[in-house]
Length: 244
Image 1 (cartoon, rainbow, N blue to C red):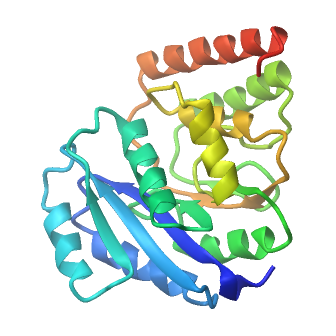
Image 2 (image 1 turned 180 degrees about the horizontal axis):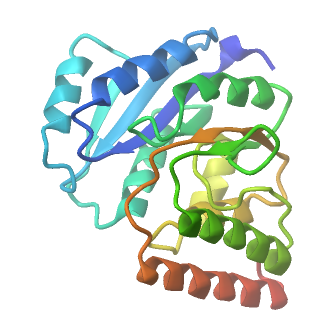
């Protein structure tokens, strides 16, 4: 596979990132331009959850940075809607590979090149891992680490997956892999959607690369944990019924 034939799309939801949104965009694009992609475009999804001027700052940046597209999505109702909106924007643009990354430097742009290097070996998906060899999770509470690790163990046990980190974001898909995920339908409305995606991809050719995760998102609510357990149980029942 020749990277010069690849149109890379990057999707990144942002909300209330005025302090570092521009520096993040520039850092990420600088890392990606180390590879001679045929075309490169960053789709930043903004919705009504962002109230601090992030949108205006990015729209100003886009006037001089043609690789940046600000996607205004006021219809979004939850974080999953923001991610799916970004996926659909990248697919509609004709992207061959789609990289998903979180804003605010919680995901390190410097980790992006290893996703591309690995994907060039012929994989369908490359997932970031905080818990595999070389991965790190910084500034996270014990509860957050426990929930993430427990989620990985339970999912692997119940659904037959084999990844070392089933709950993280930061991932790269081929166009066909992402289209398959969206066709299956992401039913989770909270953070479990990242696990749901990995479950859908379990029969594809997948790899993991180590990432550093910093500045975890706000407190993980009991409702989100209960939603995750309910969706996990639902997927387990689908597996037993032979429809997963």
